[in-house]
Length: 170
Image (cartoon, rainbow, N blue to C red):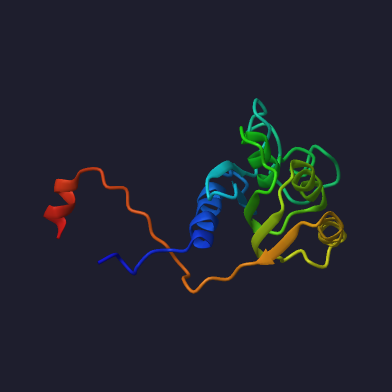
């Protein structure tokens, strides 16, 4: 008899996006994205961070400041953009899982890449012009967006180094 204790595709792919977010060095907002084709194959993963070759120690991570030398915003590549850039496959008809609703800049990239569905968990910036523009563009381009909520709240990962040591702990 098969196990009844397994996660759905949406939970699985959002879990991959959330795990990817843990790679981000941003101290205030860690975002991950996972792009999946129509066959439930992962075709792109990304998280927010600085461009390749730009030192995490030389650029600012601050959220507030008076000029470009004081905030992260001119430098950070968003998770959605990284997932698209990291993809080696055709993204037409794909869906993207992201924990934070995409900004207008990422929405343009999502539309241009041919992604047709955005699945997200958090829309905390829904009242900003950026997110309003994203939703308007998605609607005009026929990109569906859907807020996901899950019955499960937590999935734990265990890295088993030695199967014999785990048995001895029990």
